[in-house]
Length: 377
Image (tube, rainbow, N blue to C red; front, side, top):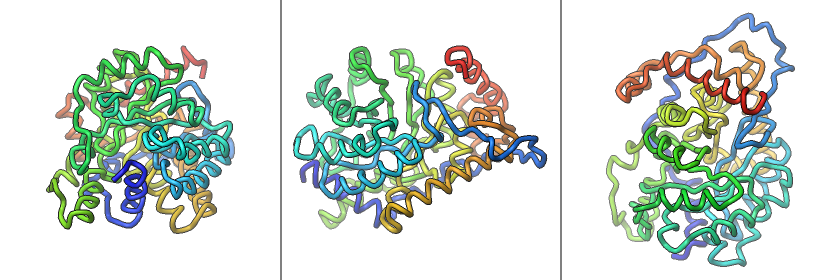
């Protein structure tokens, strides 16, 4: 199966099959302390947010979903119009198909045509750097959508269980460093559903990477997705993941804290099972800059169309706004100062990883102070 057809099959499986992890993203173990007298005005809450040196009107990213097929162009067409309306950020899916077949370029380019002012994120798989991809291909992906940043997605779990997967992940950090030194837009290191960890983020920050998408366990699971693809094609999965399909990885809440602990001055997208404005607020309160969503975007677009997606984003933004209001804040940065409790499994796992929850919550303020010093927020 060529790359173009595989992309369409991925969309169909994600929409129609149960590919959500059984494991929790652990955001249920985060609770805001309600402020019944917030001493502010809901209408005055400022949702604008800097991200990778760009200002968006609300701290939301529709993370990389699709492209590379004529049918996928329809999805990107609708999503990008909604993105432009709200001035939030958007990532496209892997652009490998369009680099291999220029006839597919417009399925990606349409997002910039529809959203000329939006923060757009190009996308290439890290495994391709061991298959001949280099600065030329990276620049093609960036130029294709006039991107503000490029996500290099790291997906060893998905590749391990894809029938035709690329599993050579050796010597990639040095290649990422070389590319980072030569391109003019930021690199976002993006997982796809199994989460980042503190040690890797620290290493990548040391070579100049400052933007990360944690894409933690607890949302759409690409190990499970590839297993379903294999079963459909062969009658059974060629590589049966067993419990790995649901339980392998770093849950989203844990991954956000680990990423921030590994690089306090970084920009972080908190994604992985984000389904509404409260999830988004919790992800930001834990230390991410913005929250990312993909699966609910596809699902609602399929069921309710572009107008339904517009209503969903509007609702999510209002829920996020009221979470700031009800916790006594005035803007998105207030979430880093908000009083939250971390308990249960999330607390236990953080302690095992050497992170004391209350000490960490206080350290979030270091990021805020750094931003004020360097960006005047």
